[in-house]
Amino acid sequence: MIFTIGWVNIKSALIYGLVTGVVAVGLYTIGQGDVFSLQIKPIANVFTFAFLGVFVSLLKNLLTTKEGNFAGVVKVIPEVK
Image (cartoon, rainbow, N blue to C red; front, side, top):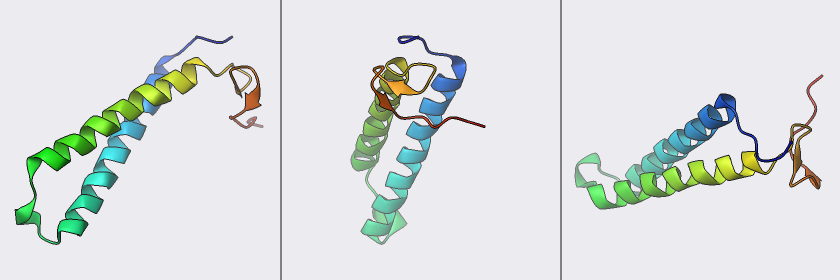
């Protein structure tokens, strides 16, 4: 059934957002080359976009059927055996 979502989907989306934010901040830090020269605005931007990624993940989960078909057309989740 399409347009259903469970706690597993919500937790998964939050983990994706958190991991994306942490990796992006790590890359930003490496790019700066100095931890003490970091600025808060780019870090806030990174976590804002990571938070938007949570909503994209939830939207994908809302449009995926229990059989793993996105919008009922394309298989996006493999069958677990």
